[in-house]
Image (tube, rainbow, N blue to C red):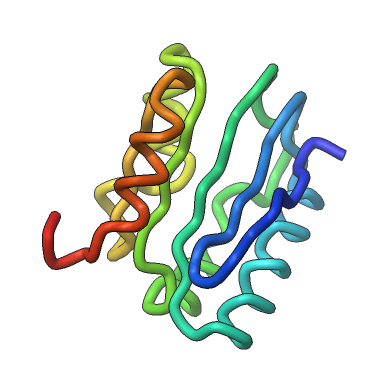
Amino acid sequence: MGIEQLRSSKPILCFKVTGTLTRGEVAWLQSKAVAAIRSWGKVRTLVIVEDFKGWEKGPGWDDIGFSNEHDRNIEKMAIVGPEEWRDLACAFVGKGFRSVAVEYFVSSELERAKDWLSQDSELQ
């Protein structure tokens, strides 16, 4: 599987993405997020990108139903990965077009990303 859920604890969900991302894997990740939202209320998400190859070609990537329904319960999203994926990853998650605060950190900044996620949103 290209997405693996890492050890997560309230309110931070942690995932690792590798290889070529499929719509099915995104749906799986979204189901994990919905379960955490139901259990915890508000969540923050850390996505670590390693050995990423991109997205599976095909239809269905333009579905924003999850965002429309759940963004109010997602406070922040930190993506950590190689610089080469910064722009495409930020575009993929809709940075700047969603109410969710999204930041991209290069792989060497994992601790900085975790610190950012743990800070209160009002301090940003």
